[in-house]
Length: 88
Image (cartoon, rainbow, N blue to C red; front, side):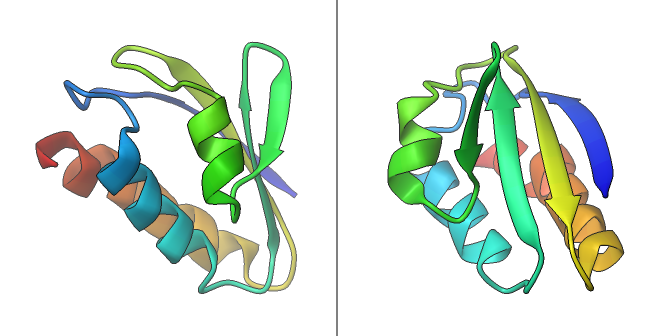
């Protein structure tokens, strides 16, 4: 299991388009993936779950990945949050 904390830098947070891209990315992996924010945990493969967290700019989230492709999943999600979502 891998856990990693992130601070969201996208001006609009994890809004609909960014959340959709995030969920599409998580669904490429066999591992279980969760997002935690303020002691709430949701399945990262669920757009409704991600939207329910209300992740805004400067929010701190933790991504938890557990499974056979966890390292690859965490690397891709880290790149997505660190680079691609900032400009959406």
